[in-house]
Image 1: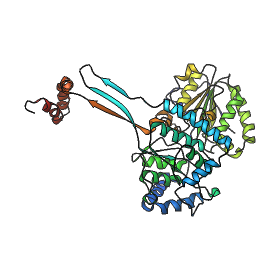
Image 2 (image 1 turned 30 degrees about the vertical axis):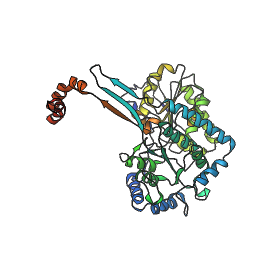
Image 3 (image 1 turned 30 degrees about the horizontal axis):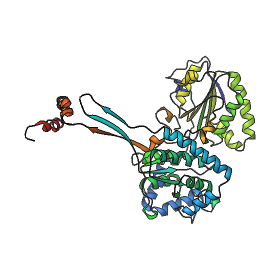
Image 4 (image 1 turned 60 degrees about the horizontal axis):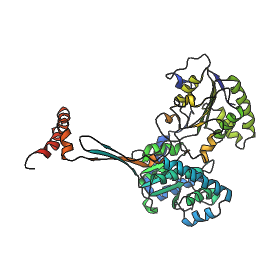
Length: 437
């Protein structure tokens, strides 16, 4: 089961903390070479390559890559009433929080004249990847699509793998979520090939390239997104899920254990890390993890994740040391279960999203808290943000100077131009003040 590492009496600093944090070690194939080949097949052979990859990876053949509006509509009709109610409430909450986060335009006017306006412009066309595999993720449809809609994206394309268990169709719950959100351009394709199709288009089926690709996926999908970044924008290279918990002796060990298991059930490579100032809590959490890991539905998967190199319990001397360790880990999800969480929140700078207190589990954020669950993993929280409307927006500045306003800065522009040995830059200004022009 999960290991306990005692770091009490260890001098933890911001400089050395990264040396203690665990990461998943992914052995095996040269992913870049494999993914590059899969993507090249799609750009060269289009539909033929996508169908071949579906047969190879999803055991599906003879299916349509284009999901019909009839199937989307029927899937919504057949959706369980309770699940539809939960999905509608999730959509409502995520939409409100997303719309509230849309950046506002601004304008700066200078006393000497001239202005600079900043506006936010959505991309026209966005691609949303919804994974298949070990689980069904209607919540990922909601998180991606609602953020794009809040940004004002006019064309949203969804791709998700065809399912052998569904007769070569996409999963009906995923289809229902798309229909509920009004997404009608949906394709049954997955993996690296689907990312290539979104980035470069597939003319045979009318799939035009998108400008931004978002959504989580396996390591092949994450690698493919990295390879097309620059051709299109991406949210991040989301990999196996992560949970970090900072807890002191006031935390409830059963809550901590339940939350660690909740993320470990995603994947054998999921990372579950507890950083605590209490050895007693660490030991009680370990006992609870043993019990919960044996009784949970995905017991084998949870045990593998908790026993992996990427998971651990750390006992440290102080909350300050816990903060340093957490920032070095930069987990996708960070729970803070301490007596006075507000005291340390400003110091917790590196995490995808932060969940505060005993009654804010990551599960709430996964579905109904109103926050977005598409978050950076693998330490990328040090420099990346979670998915939001901003992912689909570009800032543009509009500069407006009249002759008098330009005259106030003309000499200084010329000075810069001379210093940079770009005299024509200056002449573009002085020409506007020459007599007879």
